[in-house]
Length: 192
Image 1 (spheres, rainbow, N blue to C red):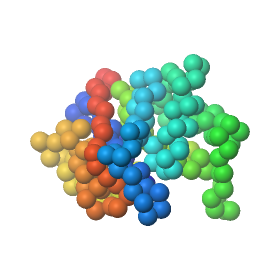
Image 2 (spheres, one colour):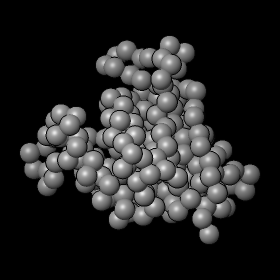
Image 3 (cartoon, rainbow, N blue to C red):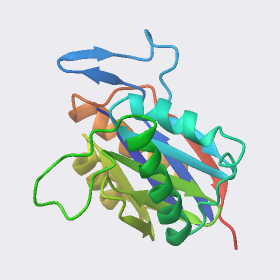
């Protein structure tokens, strides 16, 4: 499990992620796992993935290809197009088991991803719904806690995008057993 968050405020954009890996009842903290990061760079975008830990490896492997390493992810449309291609590869090359509920309209990619770049903050759900967020959002096992922390503190003058994103993850780590410190963040200027 994990908790990830994105925030846009006052011309700055931040993305944050915890570093805990959880398998069933077991926890693997960053103190024991060297490759604990949930953040990855694709061109001028930063992505954070929530779901099975293997999805980080899959995204790293898929986006490292020379024709995809600078995939434009600057709008909901570009992200949706990229995820449609990724979903096909998930099934054919990475052996994704897309089944979830029998009444689902589409196959699931079985991961939730947040994206931050100079053009905005975005979320991609398992069903490949792409949302562009105006202020903030969170995914993962601590979603409700992180969103509550962001809602309660976003308008405070002394909070910038990075401190808000960190606070969301800190709150989730305090109250959600699937979220753990330390926190990793990336910050960028918003494109005018």
